[in-house]
Length: 147
Image (tube, rainbow, N blue to C red; front, side):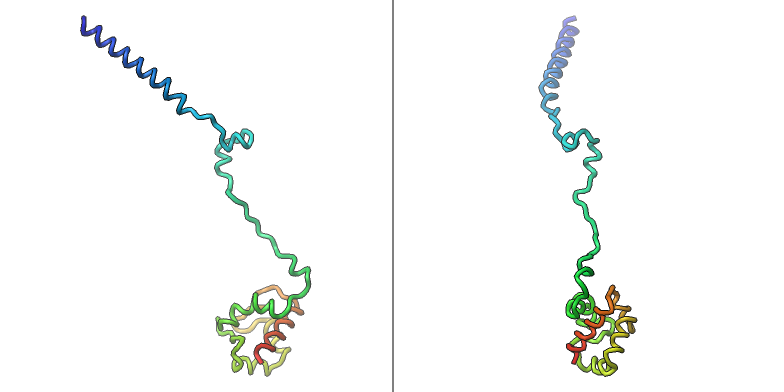
C-alpha cells in the first residue's frame, strides 16, 4: 500500500507542476494583438495580408498631343532612331550618306509617302501615331542629317 500512496503523490506532484508551468507560460505566449487587421477597423486579417504592396496605373500621355506637333529631332530620337541609328532590319543608318543618296534623290514627297505608308520592314508612320505635320518635320530632319 505504501507504493500505491507514493505513486499517487508523484502523480499529483506532476499535475501540480504542469499546472504551474501552464500558468506561467500561457500568459507569455498570448500576445496583445495590435495587428494591421485591428488598425484597419476590424477587417478580416486575411484580407489585410493579401492586399497589394503597391498600385500601378497606366495612363495615356495626352500632354504631347495638346502641346502641338513635335519637332523632327524629337520624333527621330524617340521613334525612328531605334532602327536608323543601328541599321536594324536593313534600315539605312542616319550617317550613311551613300545609303541615303538614292532615297534623297527621289525627293521629299516620295520620302514622306514612304514614312506615311511604310516601306520594306518599316511600318507605316514608323509604327507610331504621327500627324502629317510631324511626318513632314521628321522627313526634313532626316534629309538635313543625311545630306
